[in-house]
Length: 120
Image (cartoon, rainbow, N blue to C red; front, top):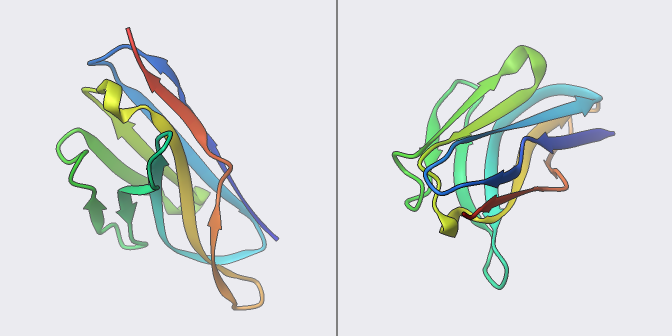
């Protein structure tokens, strides 16, 4: 099986920064795209950022210019550096990995989420 685990969330003041991490583990042959999504109370889950295995990135409009996604392929880990945080960035942040497992089957795996709260 494959597990995806996020870390790094917490409480931060407006204008502050946070760095989220997400690691996939288990019977992994290859990881294709990895990404971050978020869901605020009463709202739908939305894209934050994605990164391909080759490093091509894509960002949601609400975070462009304030976040940067990166990955360490050797460690099956993706990072999300968030700067200039705003109260509206408060949400549960989820990591997703598009994983090819040891049986050559491809599936999306999601983490359990990490809470980010931006408040003074």
